[in-house]
Amino acid sequence: MRTNSSETVEPGDDPADGWFPESVAATYDDPGGANAPDVVTPMVDVLAELADGPVLEFAVGTGRIAAPLAARGVRVSGIELSRAMAARIADKPGGNAVDVTIGDMSSTRLPGRFSLVYLVFNTIGNVTTQDGQVDVFRNAAAHLRPGGLFLVEVGLPGVRGLPPGQDTVPFAVAPGRDGGGYVGFDQYDVVTQEFTSNHVTVSPDGKGRFRRIPFRYAWPAEMDLMARIAGMTLKYRWAGWDRSELTADSTKHVSVWEKSEDGLTPGAGRTATAG
Ligand SMILES: C[S@@+](CC[C@H](N)C(=O)[O-])C[C@H]1O[C@@H](n2cnc3c(N)ncnc32)[C@H](O)[C@@H]1O
Image (cartoon, rainbow, N blue to C red; front, side, top):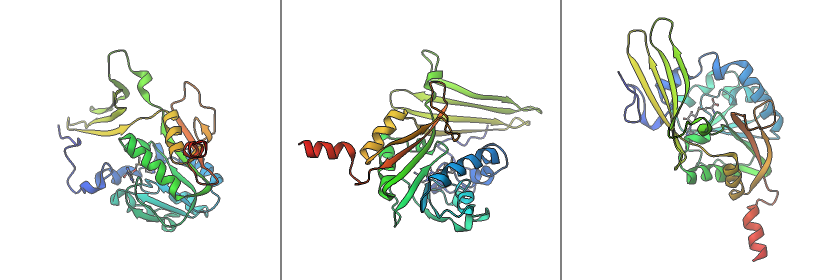
């Protein structure tokens, strides 16, 4: 079985593109799934409503969200690690208007102040250390004007699905019609909060591909603390783009933090004045 684990890349892939090189970018925009209009449109609706001036997408990818948002007249900038992904933005309606910078969202700083920074599709989890995720929150806050908003869409940690003593939760077992098929499972380390998403695809002739992508999970409360460290406080928390209430059965959250009007870290400010 041919593998594409963390140790190998496909021919033609640039290792600098990280987990989203050419071989992934080539099919990222395929119709359906995350690209279906009934997925994309509600996201763009919410983001357009929250935008009150220029916006910035961290990890903008192929412009799945940024391009249709720009097509509505919102000024959109993006930071993206993978050149292979970013190369596809301009192909989409609205994409030519998206101002893209290749870089790391935890450290790349663009000029200007934005009304909204957003980071969707679980991508905060691609930063696999707590320090790195805090840096993402800090960098988001650094790009916001006072009162600006930082929005994150991310799945809730799947660890509640772990049977006692086991570290793996399957999320898909899909036999193909002509043989082969697809199996997906997440494997958790509940001590480090690191996990891997594992994708095994077998073609009808028996050839297969194993992709293993590392993530870090964090509960919403930990993200509230990261936001607080960065000088932001929670404004909205929804179970999805329909703004429904988060419950114990929710599978993801869409959270929005607001940068304080004075730009101070809430906790640090209070400690300093109490001192
Ligand atoms: C699941 S895709 C999401 C793309 C886009 N936001 C969307 O919703 O379709 C994740 C993207 O994050 C990018 N990425 C991962 N880590 C990054 C980082 N530290 N800085 C910038 N981009 C990053 C990847 O290259 C990839 O394009």
